[in-house]
Length: 320
Image (cartoon, rainbow, N blue to C red; front, side, top):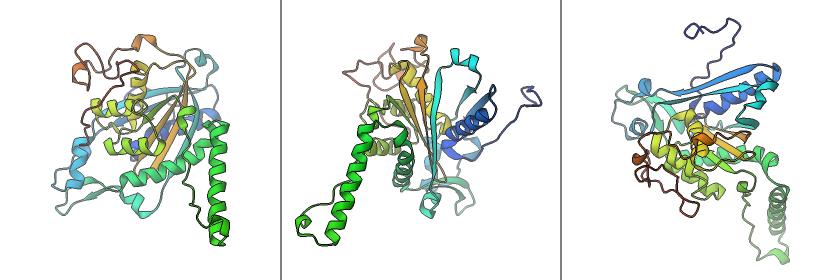
């Protein structure tokens, strides 16, 4: 407040230490504050400063953070003023938060000291599995709000079929003796979500989400290209991806965007936005001036600028 000469009645909140999912947590907090105080505005700032967490030891599990994380930041202005609806770019529809509390989840992203006393962040090999479990719980809450009725009915029918066959086999009913228990049905979120912004936490995380949700290369392109261009900018990465969608994915008014963020703890948070206004001046104009450094881009082009028949291809990620 002192640095930027803010008014004395401005309320500030520091959500440091919340991990890579802090942005959605901040947006959720801002939403609640604005709901309780109509006619107000909230400024959300997400930054990643890797200087203080630079690891100087030799443990391989901790050295990964030095190559994966990058400095970055973003700022959002949220408002509950009616007049601001005329120039708003997005409308926040839903936010959902999920946190796992078991030991494996808590330790998969953990700050500690090595044998020589060097402080660093240790990344577990089980982080993809833990992220999958957290995302599954989050999407159980998200599904009823965004999935079409047909997909919700398919999920309910699948669960009933699994329970019926399981119960029948336990009771040794002859008619189901050779039946196999049906596999769990994964609903197609692509039928209700137009664009996906998956936290660019690493190549393995993006591929894991892609596999679990059955997404295509084009649907995960914003995350892959953001990871390639900017690295893991922590909580701000989902807004680098949102900017990529505006520039290269042909965002249209009324389309829905799903942001999925993962963070230490272990947390999985999601937010659903709908586009109200599209800035056409940004289309096909790279945020990064050195467009030639991007994968699959020729001089004078940008990643993802290809036609729908030839989706962008990503090169090696910063996490490899």
